[in-house]
Image 1: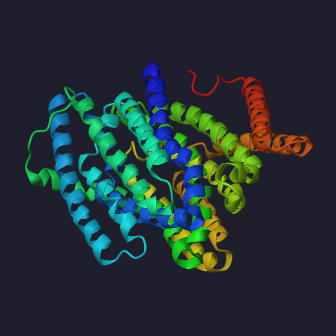
Image 2 (image 1 turned 135 degrees about the vertical axis):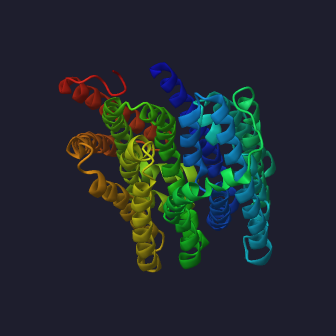
Length: 473
């Protein structure tokens, strides 16, 4: 099982990485082609489209994985569960697609053309089966096929997007790649599960539990996606362009966290079904140690090089993105902490209400902070709101679960890796100040030095602790 988990983690991280890395690879080209206002306009249209996609999936990406993982050893129950869930998905996604067309033709403003060419994102919700494949612990076809399709999409961007008026092509290419990626995963289900029509009341029975998780998903996106809409409306497309490109780097890195959690949730759900509570506790402790090491390296590393990186990567017009990226990077630590608790303790036990309470509290804090701070601080106000929101989520989890989990030990991990990360930050910035040249060579040397410092100190800390390295038994 350990070997399977490592393979699935690799494949899912590759999948998550390529889902965001290839659009990120085209970001410097797009930034120089359409400018800050063009990036902001696309970001606004995509954010609204993504919200409709979330509604279309109705929390199925979490609920479906758990439901399939629990019955995957019983083929008859598996087929019935899959069929009832897909029927529900077709109903909800179909209604959402109709609502999307209503938005595009009746309510969309300047972003109308871009929004129309993002329609295939909503269509793709009808045939999204990632939740089933992940519940079955099948990650390889998702990773490989999506990698190929996303790579082809990136090539199309460089070929066909030449000026600002081609922004609709950029939208259509990524929208089409999402649909093709979902369709490409269909062969992976062959022989593993089969659709059999079931009474619609069985499908409707999933609506309630899915809706509960959907509330939490939407709450999360109030402070991840709605931020961009609010910045656009309250501070303008230029500010949103700066925020979009800063947040894009953080979103890319958080994909590693999501990938790890997505792999672990079906495994832990299966263990929970068999009553292996103590083994789950040991797994959570190892996961927390490993994840906090990973996110601390990311957070302090980004903070160390954000300013020169943003200018080199996006161009001088996006120098402000570096200033936004520095505080935004530290949300990675909060996201990592909360993700381990959510995917390895809360959701496998079916205690969805804890997840809902924590993210709804975070969304409320974020919304209030955004309304107060964006008019005064512009994009930086959204960054502060995001920091407050991401900090609220693990805090609420702690208040509810403090007697069940060893939070003292977990916070010790946070302090340990924060100190190592701070030492790395000082070393990286010190090297940058000493180098007589700049550019990509200087940035590369700084990144290399950061890896050596953080990696060396972390290995030393693990050795001195006398415990096995995280991830090893």
